[in-house]
Structure formats: structure tokens, C-alpha cells
Image (cartoon, rainbow, N blue to C red; front, side, top):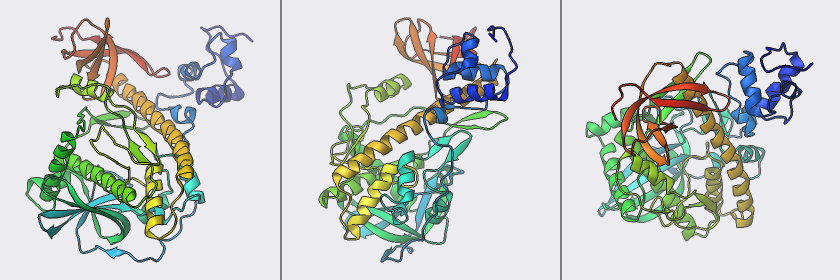
Length: 470
């Protein structure tokens, strides 16, 4: 039977399945769409499913389309091996995360060692003690590339049981792989080391840690001082500081919720400590000829000055993509001569590879050869790219849900870019950009209203609200 576009067809179970498979990117053709003279695309199938009420706006197909699995890892997890570790349980350590974080994989501690030096410890969950290269857990993690963080669910790269076993601060003491840097007052490292440790970790939210910093408590004051010195040193070497709005997007069947992400100083302090850990691990590996997935980045394509939102936006666009390679090279965006991501082995596969390589060296074994590691880097990077894109599209989808639920709301916006007659405006409280037709110059602020929100194409129209000042 030939459907007309104005028809509201009653679909059989087989026809609904056919549409769903196409919308999810699991097949390429649809007789239903063809007979309705509609394009046989995932977007057209998605639109029809919404129109017929077979899908709700809460349903997102992007993970399926990008081959990011939504099934949890259920493989068995071994126990930690008995091995010699440096006991650091006497040294207070803190895992500082967003409220509600469920996979604490890094913590920081400070040790005064004299001679004008302060030892920064960055403890990381010793995931590689449980996941050997090419083991079933390793192959599964590699096939995913990274943990998938969607607004309505989180799908781990490793089993929940492993997170519970290895997460820092989830037990009285925890095994860790720790990076230490002996830092002087200027943020330079006098020495670096990587050791297996046992640590005692207390979990804090960023706001709790910020309260301790503002109260003048140690070690938070020292951490902040070291972080400021380190950031200044990196900026003197060309590091780019980019400060754009960030939000948290959460969703369920009832609705979507977008909330601005606070940026207390302790969030930046922790980020700087993680950067230092990556630098220290890379130095240690380079000094000991350990192949790692070193993170490198070319020089920015141009220099952008200023601290306004348009300048921050333009500066981010100058950054080349980070590349991962078996030999060290400069990471110009960070202002570092070499760098490796090391602090998220439960969430990023290449961090896990770094841990596996460091652990092999510490145990006196031969690390994975560069050629083998390169193939692992390529496979995991491809899979992680799909994961990151699925996250980005899902966040945009649910942000549109949040906007659609408030059709009369006017949103403060700023023009951040122009291309001919078209401008790009950023809505800071949503961290959401949208094209708009306006002759307004970059930096102009006004309020916008949304209309014609299309969930199947992730598009919308925005216009300047009446009586909005320019």
C-alpha cells in the first residue's frame, strides 16, 4: 500500500521495528519510508517515530548510530595481587570531584620535604593491577575506548565491580599507582617518580574543598599555591587558558535539566594537579625509555588576545586536535614539552595503557612494544571518538528538550562569531551555541527566543526577542 505524507499509518510490529532499526543506524533501508515518499535516513525515521508517538523526546539514538554500546561490562574482576607497596596511609589524601561522582580514580596529597621543595602526590586507582594487556577486560575496555557519559545514564568502560574494588576512598585503604613531583616555589619539578602505593583517601566535593581553602586549611592552601605557580609557568611557555561556560545536563523520562557548572578555584587546582601528574609520568617514562601513548599538540594556528567570551571562543578554535603517539613530543596547548594522560584509567582506555606500561617497568617486565601499542592507540581512539560524539549529540538533544519545555523564555546571549550575514550566538547559562540572522557585531549582547525545535535533526531557530537591547 502506498502511503501519502499526510497519512497517519497504522504500523505493524515489523514495520515499527524496521523504522527503529533505521533510526538507530542499524540498517540502511526502510520500505515504510520509501512508500511514504520520505528519505530513507535515520533522521527521517526518527522524525516519523516521534510524529506517530512511538518514540518520546526522551529517546536518543546517537549511541547506537555511533556504535557506542549501551550494555554494561559484566566480566569477572580479579582480586588485587599481593605485592610490595609504599605505605602512604599516614599522609592525608583527598579525592575531589563533582557531587554525585561514582568513579573516583584520582586523589591529591602534599608532603613537606624541606630544601624549599614541596612533594605533590597524585594517587591514581591502580586499575592496571586488575587489567592485564590483552586480557578479556582489556579487550572489552579497548573496544569501548572510554566510559560513555549520557545525560540519562552512564555506561562504564570497566565493570561496576572493578570501580567498587579500585575506586579511591571507597574503602579504608586503597592500592594506587602514584606520581610524585618535588616542586619548588616557581612550579618547576626538581624530581619526579612513579611508585606503587597504599593510600588512605577521603572524598570531598569541589564545594567542600573550596570551603576548606577559604578557611585557610592545609593542605588546600599549599595545593592552591602550587597550582597557581604551575599555571603561571605553563602560560609563560605558551599554554592557552580557555574559560568558556560549562553545564551539567541530566535527563529522564519526565524532562531534561541544564544547570551551570560552578568553577570554584579548587576545581582549577585539581585540574592543574592532574596536568602535573601527566607531565611527571611522561618525564618518568621518557627518562626510562618506556613507550607510552604520549599526548602531543601542534602550535595554535594563530594568536587570539583578550578574555571576553568571543575571544575565548576564537582561541579554542585555534587549537589543533591532540594526537597520541608512542614517542614524546610537545603539547603546545598546555605549554609542556611532553605529556601523557594518566589520571583516568577507569574512564579512558589510553590512560589505562599508560598504567600498564608503567606497571610493567616497575615490575621489571618488558613494556608493550611501540608498534603493538600504536595499534591499540588507533583502535581505542577510534572507539573513543564515537563515544565522545554520542555524548555531544545526546547533550545537545536534551538541551533542546530543556529549551522546548520553556517556549516563552528569553535567554541572554552574546554574539561570538560572524560569517557574512549569519552570526553565532552563545547562551552562557546553557553553554549552547546557535546560528542567528543579525547584523550585530561580535560581542553584542541581547536576549533570544527559540522556535521550530526539531529533535530528529537537532536543529532549532532562534530570533532576537522583542525589546531586547543591542
